[in-house]
Image (cartoon, rainbow, N blue to C red; front, side, top):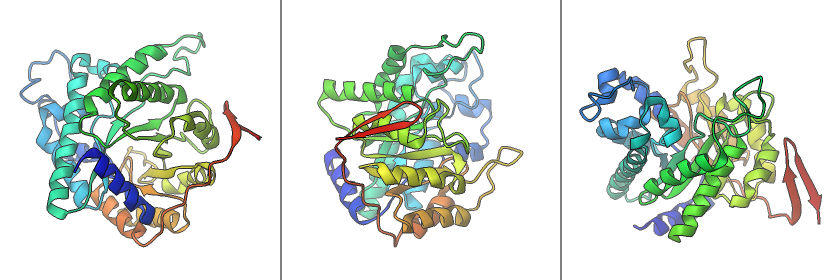
Length: 352
């Protein structure tokens, strides 16, 4: 089955059913309890600085473990899994002085997910998709990291765009979608969108884009200050296959902002919250049934088209979510409106 065939099949399924995304990769990697040597593997045994915690490097140093995690999520009911490439950019890999292998990390992360998807699809006869995960990096284009110099930036737009362009180009042969996720700064997301549109122009391949922002707290805004509606108005020009929210909040806290997007977006809604809020030890206590209870209600209320889990979620969470959403009908995107839609921190709409 070609990528065009898979996208068409998933699109057809999405018209009749709510699609299921996978859960947290990091949570599953933490459960492996790898030490420094476990992260290094043979290839990086002599690396000159510590790399423990660089989850994406496991695409190169422990590929079987990464592939097994993808397989577990598919077997739990996921229609789409994300690649283990959240930090597979030269910018993010600079924390480990691994800029030189960022492209290799991205390529192998996408290839491993594709292999797992194809193996499960071949065994079950069902289409399984791969979303190339593109994280926000550890830099922000909208906010100064120096309190006394609000105009200062660690990085510029073109540097971020180029990093994303290299990452996406490496993943492109294997993925069905690009997923720009955990967006706390919309300007970073715009750099990713520009990179993907540039790649599309260069290759002629229109790989669909999915966009997922992050409401950082109960203020209902991203870290760069936008409401959910303003965020949508800022990125709708990319004509995403789906738009939504993930991370930072549990389902209970995230629901009003998912509802806000569902009210205005003329595309599919994706939502994958954390397993509740972290406890004092930074761990997540929400059980699979609790998370599934929330997302099942979203599904029955007609808010979503794609659901899954972020931090703290496991294959058991995804299995429960898939069961809870199974009988619900997918949300119908709102009709495209002819109007001028602008945004700063707040949305502005001028009807025609």
